Amino acid sequence: MPREKGRKVVASNKKARHDYAILDTYEAGMALTGTEVKSLRAGRASLVDAFAQERNGELYLHGMHIPEYTQGTWTNHEPRRTRKLLLKRLEIDRLIGKTRESGLTLVPLQVYFSDGWAKVEIGLAKGKKTYDKRQDLAKRDAEREIARVAGRRGKGMSE
Image (cartoon, rainbow, N blue to C red; front, side):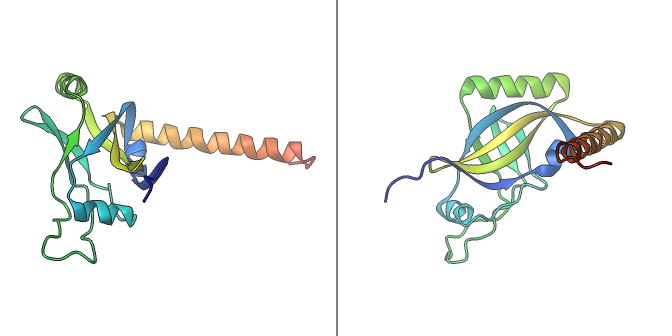
């Protein structure tokens, strides 16, 4: 069977972009078992409470839920187990340094297959305050309203 090409998104964390200001993003592989990969290929995963954390000089993904594979046997995986992130040593050291010094956190943004390999996009993020979230919502609503009015004008309709 030929290897698949392109990028197929399995799960995305929409709440992360609302709760955090994403400063930088990184693509990381994940150390997975066979049934986890099969469950991901079926499009089943959740990043709702997931976060990445450093332990012993490595990065691990906590709280990501990959449900058990339905056709799996006794070799099935634990749904919320801790998974190791696979990054280059330079990237790991840089991320660990930034999270320690300036109070930033690592948040998974997407899980996807890139050319057949399971990947996770993690973001170096800073938590937003409540007023920042309200400003973002107001700005987005204003942009929508402007686009709607401009669209009506383009069609020759009055307000």
